[in-house]
Length: 271
Image (tube, rainbow, N blue to C red):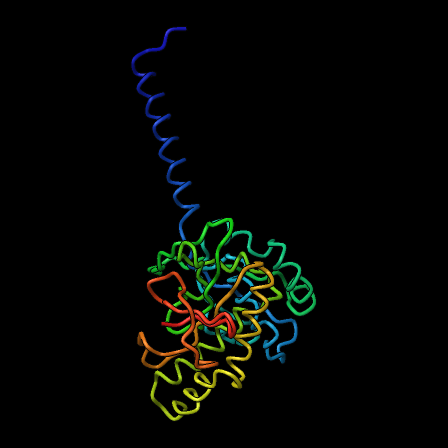
């Protein structure tokens, strides 16, 4: 049956519209989504502290961009604002195998219903563009405590890009240690009543609880990746001359412009 010109135009318009919608849908799928997760407690008297690690799990599973700093209590519910990496993460985070493994029983026993996930529409999203390591093998990795950013915390020594936490098993509590480190860093930076204590903890390289935990995390990462992992300790005024902060030796060439030295005895990296 012949097609009239008007029909051709209509078909062309419909095809163009379908293509446009498909492209827009694809773009929307990849965009970050600002949202609020609401946990309705079964027992209103519960403190809700048992859910403090949920955001860390979402971050380590590569579902959200950065871990929220607070879990807000509202009457008998808990709320936290997050930025999901994409539409699929927003819609299906609760179905992730690790989320179900670690949190499924708590959701079932301690909540009135499945967590609610509400998209926040009038939010301007600003997300750092972080390049992730895609190397099959790496010469070594650099572990550094969190300061003000969520970048350069675990770096590949071959490509110098960030290693996403989704590549790290959840039994390695790297996100908990990073939060711990950041609290001390911010207390030192604020120059308030906790400045001196925070500085002492950051610079007690051998015996401080913070850095001993960092060394434990480093050793676990080394065992997981089957490659050396070097710890970059906090230094108030970095320069090109300081030795290994553990043993005081000069170290050997790291092969990088900065940090330029490694101590294979103490598993440290420094300038």
